[in-house]
Length: 148
Picture 1 (cartoon, rainbow, N blue to C red):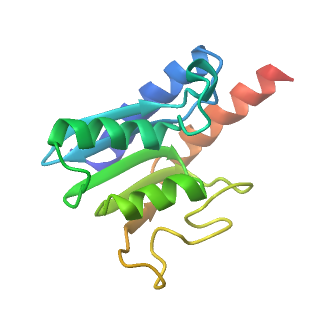
Picture 2: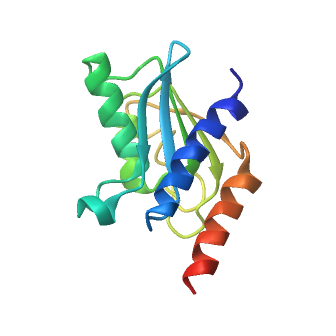
């Protein structure tokens, strides 16, 4: 499958999060052409500030693969990861990150910081940005417009 096809899967999860009142962000972990982890933002429902889509997808993937190192995996997420999530990608040694829209306020990969592929760290994630960015950004715009 293409990056766009995988990102469509992440967008489904983002829409689910939004329909539950969470910021609409969805993430999947793909390894060997199979989705091994899924996550959608749910810090409100879980009363957990770390319940970002990426963290939940990484946890599920690690449990399914029975390994906290996800070296041959790609994480697809609709919004640029924050610093916490970017750090988790490095710690898990995720091979590749594909994200949709930039997060100009909190982005930890391109917009504010460059954690995922920093030369200062022991692992660098290959980053691809902008996949279905317009769709991902529009979902967020609609969510926040409806809240105002």
